[in-house]
Structure formats: structure tokens, C-alpha cells
Image 1: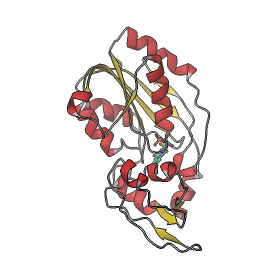
Image 2: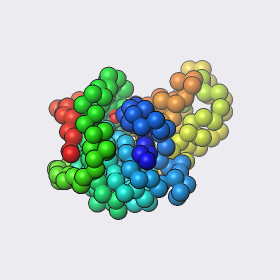
Image 3: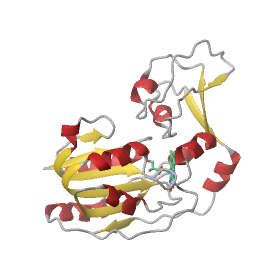
Image 4: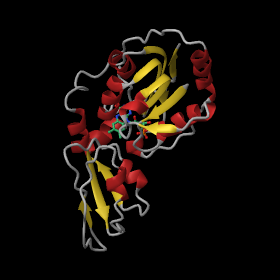
Length: 240
Ligand SMILES: Cc1cc2nc3c(=O)[nH]c(=O)nc-3n(C[C@H](O)[C@H](O)[C@H](O)COP(=O)(O)O)c2cc1C
């Protein structure tokens, strides 16, 4: 049996996970909302985004708990840098890694949309039907990448809530980190207020993309905006 697991802030990794799930007639299980029994499967396809050249916290925890004989690792990234996350993820897993992929997609902090091309990923389906261990190469990453990635994201991205907020609580319920603080009251029509999040917030932007009222917005600080306007890397890499 093949299970598809995913962590996704803005839905980009989820789109990749849904491609695999459709191929195996399975659903997509959300990392962070699983019971220990749900982490047991013969073959696991795990799809997650690269955040600050790192594996997001909930994914790291999940990979350590995962009970699968075979594992496929798929990391989506925003065409800045994928760092060394597949190699690092492989080290956390007890099962055998049979395939890996770095998939370049639109950058969620830049609100970039990009058509997902699934055809090149089909070779992974063949590998799942005849599993064999894969070598994931070690890649370079920025020397500062491991320095408090979540804190750097919080400093780099300011989030605000405007008067359209109806206090429906979706942002709080959907937050994969349980970091959203409610309630907010009396936001004037001409004003926005800072979104209150705890220190657990990793700025995955799930609240921004999920809000039905478009009441949550975000702004990048100039240093981060300048960094993101730099050279892009656009390579799909598949390891079999
Ligand atoms: C907090 C944060 C950090 C990110 N860091 C990187 C990065 O280091 N390199 C990169 O290429 N893209 C980076 N991105 C972009 C995402 O990896 C990319 O848009 C991904 O496809 C988003 O997937 P998701 O919608 O499933 O969260 C970052 C996005 C966020 C929100």
C-alpha cells in the first residue's frame, strides 16, 4: 500500500502530493494531524516545502516517527535554493529511501504562481512499483541556513490583519503550528493590525492563503525582498 503525506503552507506541495495520491487512488494525509498508527505504511510518499533551506519543523518530527518500509521524498522549493534537505531528510528516516526529487515551483513569499508539470515525476511511479535503494547526493547550503530559520522568517515577514476579518477562526484552526492568536476586535476600516502569532510561527503563510476574507496580508522586509530578487535556480532534480 502507498500512502501520500504532505505538509504545505500555500498549497504548492499539496498540488504535487495530490498528483501522487491520484495515481494511487489514495488521499493526502496532512503531516501534523496524524495519529501514530497513521504513520505506518508500506510505501510512503512524503511531499514538503523547503523553508530557509531547511526541512519545516513538523516534517522533521514526522520523518523521525514514520514507519514505512520504503520512502519517496519530494521537496518543493521556490527557485531560490533547495539546500541539502533531501540528504538531511534521508538521515532522519528508518525505512529505505527509494527516490527523491527537488521540484521548483512558484515562491510562496513572492506570491508566484507556476503551472505544475507532473509528467517528469512519472518515473517515480515506476520506481515505487520496483523499489530499490537510492543514493541522495549531499548538496551545499548557505552557512547561515541553520541559524534559527523560523526566527529569521518571523523577522523577515510581517503579517497584518485588516477590517475584513470576520473572526471566523479558520486561520487559528488551520494553523499547522497552532501559533495563531485570536480574537481580534474593532479593526478600523482604514487600518490593519499586526497578526499575533506565538514563537511557534514558521511563516508558512497557510493563514494568508486559507483566509476566506483575504483579511491576512504579509510584507517582506527590504533585506529579505532584496535577497529574493536575486539569482534564481530552476532545476527539477530526480534521484532514482
Ligand atoms: C518561510 C518560507 C521559507 C522559504 N524558504 C525557501 C528557500 O530557502 N529556498 C527556496 O527556494 N524557496 C523557499 N521558499 C519557497 C517555498 O519553498 C516554495 O514556494 C514552496 O513550493 C512552497 O510550498 P508550500 O505551498 O507547500 O508551502 C520559502 C517559503 C516560505 C514560506
